[in-house]
Amino acid sequence: MGINNDKPHLWKSDIDSSIDYYNRWFMEFAPAVFRDTRVKTTLRVNETLELTDNLISLSPAMLLENPWILPILRMSTCPPLARDRLSGLAGVSRTLISGMEEKGNPHLPKSVSTKQLYGDMGRIVDIINNLIDPDIFTWFDDQANYGAEDVWRAASVVADRLCGSDTNPIIRNEQERRQLTLVKGFLEAKGYHPAKPQPGSTFKDLPPGKFSFHLNVPGKLENDTDINIPVDIVVKRKNRNNDEFPLLIEAKSAGDYANVNKRRKEEANKLANLRRAYGKEVRLNLLLCGYFDPGYLGYVAAEGCDWVWEHRLSDLEQFGL
Image (tube, rainbow, N blue to C red; front, side, top):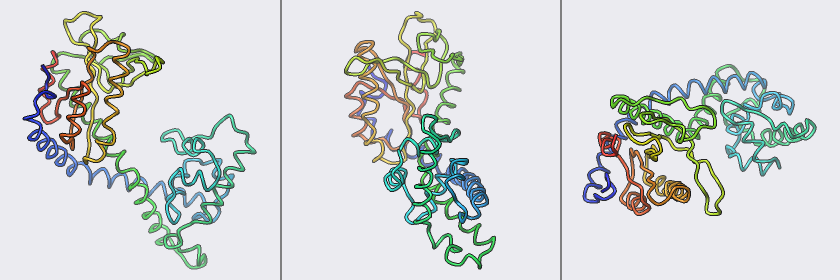
């Protein structure tokens, strides 16, 4: 017997409740986080402008030494440049651009010679210089007649562009943190304790009564190749055999219907990879919040997934916790 996947007569009311729940959270959370992010981003853009003499002195050497400024440069052109577009125009690898823009660790490839990197940076700088947005960076038309107010205004526009391109990741990351915090509180109230897995550990190292977030569960692809499957929530139920397969839960949230239906095969693929490794009895469960329509629910139910709604977290008890 399922938790929610076998109760389609309840889906409509649960969908409505989930949308209301998500929208209340969004209205309370979004304005504050966007304001905070926009201020931090504007300061980062200003730092870039100071470093490059308001983009006038942008050079390959400067970009080599400061790869973190690349996303700001991409948003300074007309039109703003996507990573793939810049890669194609400049004739540089997508991997190079991704590395330069990696959050928390912007870097250049170690396997590429300095001479080649310098050439790549030169081509990127040429593209940026040719496409600088003159409506934002007005001093490119009149370098003798601009002031601090013009620079701040330009930084604000570029920051808005950056925040706009980061909107969905900001929301998803914060929503996931919130969902995991709620589950952590629920499990600890039931007497469970968070595990501290060592690098390389899997679900097999998780003792009964423990839970972990973002833990690898080995699976198999269609060609029988081994694959590590990161699972958001892994729980080893109390008072069970140590060899019993753990409870696996993916935290999912969505602010619109279109996105979930584009991504609904992700859960089915994860479950298929798990079942190839452990048999058809394996279950992958979902924690849902937001816009999940009957089409999505019907699809994942047919694939063997069950789910708990965040607005009714107590349903987790039905998993034998």
